[in-house]
Length: 169
Image (cartoon, rainbow, N blue to C red; front, side, top):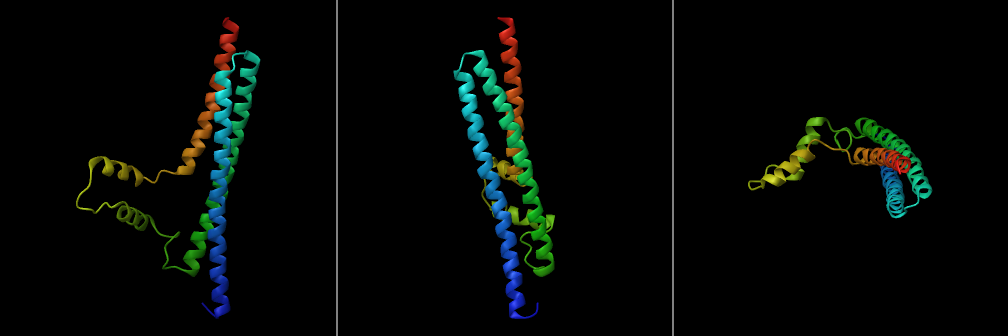
């Protein structure tokens, strides 16, 4: 690797990459929680208010908030993916034996199986089923992005129902 100074700079760069990736993940969750609380508050208001103009206003604001949530989540996912890729590239070049971020699919699955206790002698069918699902690597950030989409769709449906009921009465 070179001199001690070069080695320290490489380690420092690796730490910056990890810290930046972790920051992006933390920001994703902070922002998602904010929008989730906002949408929940709007939903509570929507279902407790009876006057049509206020319900419609809350639903429209809910649509806007959900679309903003979706855009913020997608942007955060972009930056998270970017920094994770930089980590993989850096690790392959500077620390090829680490395989923390640069591990191949076989290593990742083997690590997960060991970590989930797949090789324990005694296990329960429900636990095995849940852990088999975990091995499919569901993305928690993708799930939150889907939730933002569902809120936007839900708000659209509520606007439609509200307008329909208003016109029918």
